[in-house]
Amino acid sequence: MDEFASQYHRALGIGEAAFEGLEPHLEERNYDGWEYRHLPDARRGIERGTVLIDGEIVRGFPKVPRALVLSSGVPTQFDEYDRIAVEEKLNGYNVRVARIDGDVLAFSRSGMVCPFTTRMLDRLVDLADLFDAYPMAMVCGEMIGPENPYTAHNYPGVDSIAFRAFDWRDRETGDPLPVQERRTRYERFEIPQTPLFEFVAVDDAAETVDACIRNLDAEHREGVVMKSPDGRTQLKYTTSASTKSDLAYAFSLPFDYGRPFMFRRLIREGFQTVERDESDEAARKRAHELGEAILLSMRETITTIDAGGTVGERHTVRASTETIDVLLAHLRGQGLEIDIEDDRREDGDRVLTFRKRTPATNDTARNYLEGHVVTE
Image 1 (cartoon, rainbow, N blue to C red):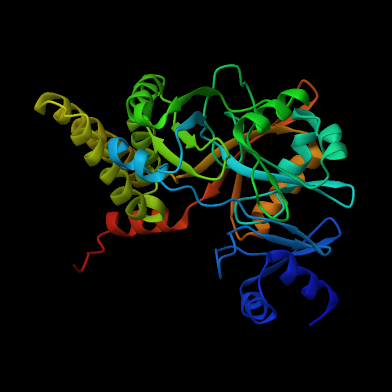
Image 2: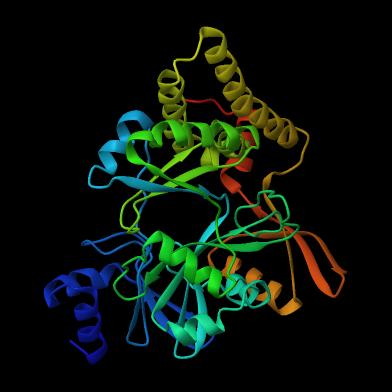
């Protein structure tokens, strides 16, 4: 076992044999002279997205469980605590930011360095003082906004793209800061954060969260994450609006995303309507809206393809020319086919609209339209 491998297994808290069993599952990458390995799926108790780079560890972000029934799920998950924090869950893409040998790098959920995010952070937040004071910090946040190359969503006050911190962990151990200490530190360094609704007693949390969810639902926002005061235990719960938005998106590309999306999200709706003891009329309204989200988006896709068009994931990004060039290279390097739809200059930035091709939906829908039959 080489020197770095020996460092890694000790830092990860696993034995040599366990690390040797983990190594075949690590993927090798290169970014701007950095050679690193990352774990795209959780293995042997090590979190998905964990990165091994230059003898250093950047831990993956732990998977956050979901409540289907608030009244029983919250007290079960937080049975060791008297109160919890309720923060907003934002709809964007998850990044972890760490400083390695002087370079600030942004890592995706699966552990790849994202060249777009790494460069964009410079214009969005100043992390220099934070990393000077806390060199082992792992800044965990969400990239949100409409001009977003992965998950675009509109938020008031965000015209392009923005960063919002939602956690702070030790990059080697993965240990979180307590919620209040984390929020105080980010305020000190003027780093924008996800909104905190309140700290609430566990016994009252289900009612409080339900009220928050109803308000967020009316604003077409995603949901909440509940956290123990020490930051170690978390639980998420999302709105019906986010479910309908997910279904509409997935079924606009039904042969790429539709099936795995549907069951989990419909289950959430089923439990929510029962827990809220909705009337038959309210349940039918919910069912109608879910059906529209699925069918109308799929109908539009099939109509587009039938008319000779193509469909795909459309995004707009605004950045320097160099940042957009490295983003396109990054996406194409993952095997994605990109069509450029608009490329212009605006206020000193390059503004690019592009579409990621989705061959499964385009090819399969076209085949069916041309008469291919389904064997069931």
